[in-house]
Every structure is written in C-alpha cells, then in structure tokens.
Length: 114
Ligand code: 5GP
Ligand code: ZN
Image 1: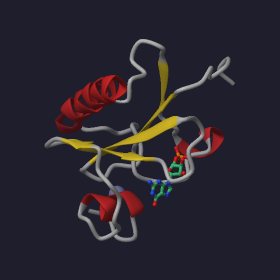
Image 2 (image 1 turned 90 degrees about the vertical axis):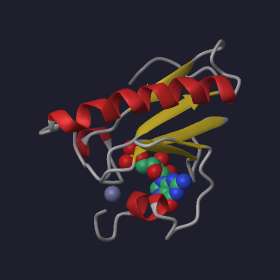
Image 3 (image 1 turned 180 degrees about the vertical axis):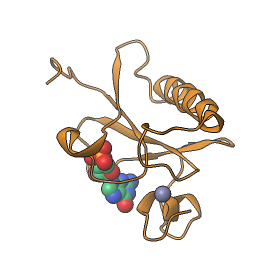
C-alpha cells in the first residue's frame, strides 16, 4: 500500500470500483476512460511502480497478471477475435498511474503498433 496511490486505494476498497476478477496476486477493473470497447486494467495487489528492479518474489505476480488477462479475454468474449496487452513504463510510454498495471484492449481493430 502506497500513500495517495489510486490503484492501492481501489485494491482496499477506499475508492469504489467494480472488480471483475481477483485472485491472491491481482485484480481486474474497467478503465475509467476506455480506448476500445473492451478496456480492462490488470493490477497487482502489491504496490510496484516499475518492472526495473523487480524482486524475485514479484515474478509470480507477473504470471498471475497474464493468467488474469487470458481468463478475462474469454470472459469478455474477445479471446478468439483478438486483443492487445500493454504495459506502459515511464514518460516515453505515457505512464499516468505509478502503480504497475497491464491494459487489455479489444473489441475493435486495434491497428498497427505505434
Ligand atoms: P497508464 O497511462 O498509466 O498506463 O494508464 C493508466 C490508466 O488508468 C488510464 O487508462 C486511465 O484512464 C486509468 N485510470 C486512471 N484513474 C482511474 C480510476 O480511478 N479508475 C479506473 N477504473 N481507471 C483509472
Ligand atoms: Zn499502489
């Protein structure tokens, strides 16, 4: 838990947000400003900002995030049509929230990267 972190506050329920999925390591919510018909955020419960400096203890959490993403793609009905997973890191990627998270985008042709 980090002070003044939006995603830590959502995790503990201090900021209300419907959790579509959760397990011991991560939870999933809809993005408040969706960029595609399906736009989910897969968020680790433990506060971490960057992948750089990740400790070995955190590595299973990354696996849990991919598992949650694949389950949610099925639950949202987009697994077959396709989806994109994005992790923004630091300024050049436009990271807005300094708590690691993965975007799941789907429901339309997402176009080429970049
Ligand atoms: P980033 O740019 O850091 O990779 O993505 C942060 C995402 O979090 C943005 O897409 C933004 O719309 C979303 N977001 C920011 N604040 C909230 C919030 O309070 N609730 C939800 N559900 N999404 C949020
Ligand atoms: Zn946090």
